[in-house]
Image 1 (cartoon, one colour):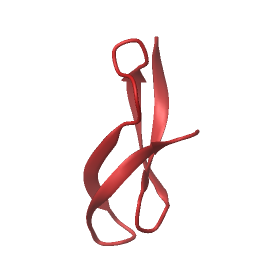
Image 2 (cartoon, rainbow, N blue to C red; image 1 turned 120 degrees about the vertical axis):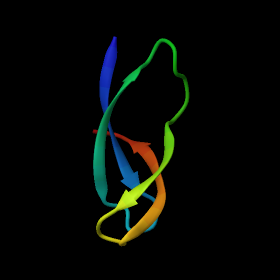
Image 3 (cartoon, rainbow, N blue to C red; image 1 turned 135 degrees about the horizontal axis):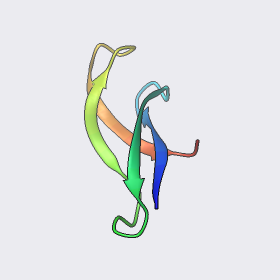
Image 4 (cartoon, helix red, strand yellow; image 1 turned 30 degrees about the vertical axis):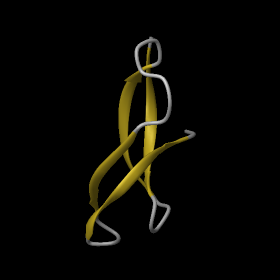
Length: 50
């Protein structure tokens, strides 16, 4: 039931990370603060379509 999702930076809109998510236990979009190598700083990354 786990699906691969992509995380994109909210400042530069680039897709930087891929993670897995269990659709049965986690509802809603994933939002994590991670390092963006294009912005050279920590920014909020949100779940996007693959």
